[in-house]
Image 1 (cartoon, rainbow, N blue to C red):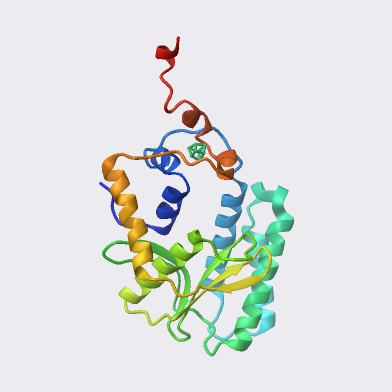
Image 2: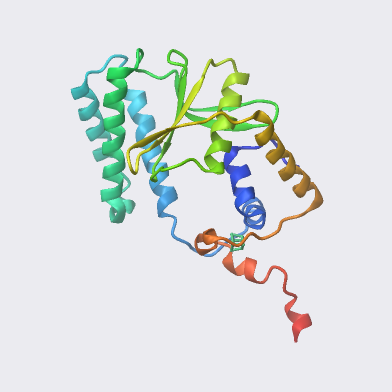
Length: 236
Ligand code: SF4
């Protein structure tokens, strides 16, 4: 039975329901380049540590020295081949934090990486501040526009925050790759709920069509997919 829907599950189902099914059933796939995901995890871990350790009212020097120490201690050495990219993301994070220190009335967030749920959805919110009425999501890639994936994620985060009595009115995606900040536009609750309902209907009916796209090049289930609707012994 399908439990509460997370943004990553909904987005993964939308990208390709067959790959979603394989992932859900823990099928072993072939090895593919996992660097972007690991880099994202590493940056998020460093950001989480940063907010654990930063005081209520730091000055800019403190922000810079703390961030430098965390990068030295926690950068994942297995990602050395993309260290320049990781450095650039981290430098952009520090630059964003220095701006935030000057511009926001309260620096420390209410919470970072907090799991919220409501009756239908669950999500992890990267950063939220009840004092400033703002939530953030850090992206290690470059952001030039918001796609449906981000709109679903942002809306589910906002719905879960609202349903848990957090007065958040603004949601920003922070693109650490290219140092851009994009604000979540107004998205109707019904749009996301209809996407989740469609996913539930398809799962209930056992419908998991393939969806060929550029993502196939990075899909760990390329081989399973190739033969998923072929009955080899009938073709002899
Ligand atoms: S190779 Fe493409 S179509 Fe096949 S399961 Fe993976 S993402 Fe889906």
